[in-house]
Length: 316
View 1 (spheres, rainbow, N blue to C red):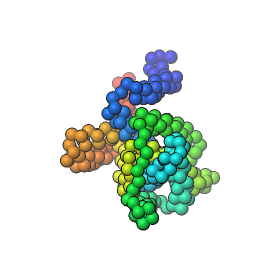
View 2 (cartoon, helix red, strand yellow):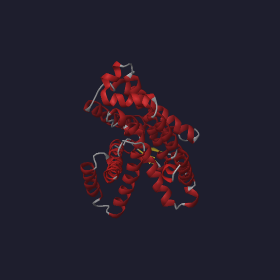
View 3 (tube, one colour):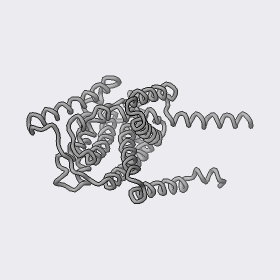
View 4 (cartoon, one colour):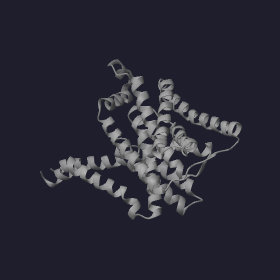
C-alpha cells in the first residue's frame, strides 16, 4: 500500500474522525466560552441542514417545515422541561416532532413540486398562529420561561445528537432504502412500479428528519431563557437549512456540513463587523454563490478533482 492509498483507507479515515470527535468533545475543557458558543451555533445549523438534506436531498421534495419541527421541540422544553430529566425532554421533543412528521407526510407527500413546498411553509405559519392564539386566549401570556442549562451540557447533548444523526444519514444513504429514495427523486413512478412503497418510505424518512430537528430545538431552547411563538417558530429556520444545503452541496454527506459551518461563520462575521449592512451583504453573497456555484462547495471541489484527473491523463 502506497502513501496515497493509506491516506484514503478506511482505518485512517476512521482514526481521523475519532480524533476530531475527541477534540470536539473536550472543547469545553480547553476552549474559550465564546468558542464554545460559536460551536453550539455550528452544530445546531449542521443538525438542521443534515436533517433537511436526509429527506429533501435525494427525493427533491423541498420542505419548508423545519421551523415547525424545531418549534415543537422548543415548546416541549418550555412546557415540561422543569419536571423531567433533560435528556428525556429532548427525546420527547424529537418524538412529538416525529409524530407530527408522520401525520404531515401521510397527508401531504402525495403532493409534488411547489404544492408540497407551499403546504409545508403554510404549516409553519398555521402552528405559529395557533400557539399564539393558545398563549393569548388560554394561558393569558405571550410566551413562556425556559429552564436554564449550562453551555457545556447543551454543547455535549448537541454533539451527541449530531453524531447519531451523521451515523443514521451515513447508513441510510448506503442502504437499499437510500437507493430507493434516490429512485424516488429520479423517477418516482418507476420506483413505484418496481415495488418500492414510495409513500411509506417518504413518510418515514420525512418523520425521521423531523425527529432530529425537534430534539435539537428542545435542547437549544435552554439557551433562550424566554420564548414565544415568534421565537420558537421563527420563519427563518425554514429557509436556513435549504440555503445552507445549497451552499455546501448535496452530492455528499459532508456537503451540508461544510455549507452549515461556512454559512454560520459568515453570518457571525457579517453580523459582528457590519451590523447595519449585515442582511444586504449576506444576500449578495448568497446570490453570487447560487449563480456561480450551482452545485455548492462540494460541486466546486469535485470539479477541481475531475479537472486534475483529466489534466493528468492528457499529459500522460
